[in-house]
Length: 92
Image (cartoon, rainbow, N blue to C red; front, side, top):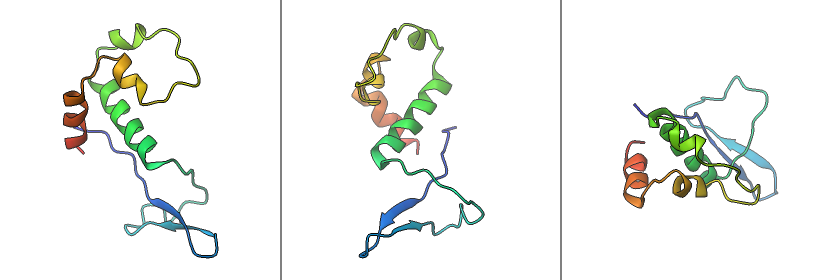
């Protein structure tokens, strides 16, 4: 089963104010929020799913990762192919 992170959309209105778009009221009781770019959120969800399915051997072999390297590069470092990533996306 795929792991899911509850999320909503944070958007600027015409006046530049930030509004929360949460049609399912997942966050109606929350006082604070964190905004993450949608591509990064998808990447985080995929990485969590990968961690849950992985035997952790690949993670130990990653070594030091430069801070400037994008999060998405972890898929390549972990040995995932484009087909693997496409299959993980289909699980959402």
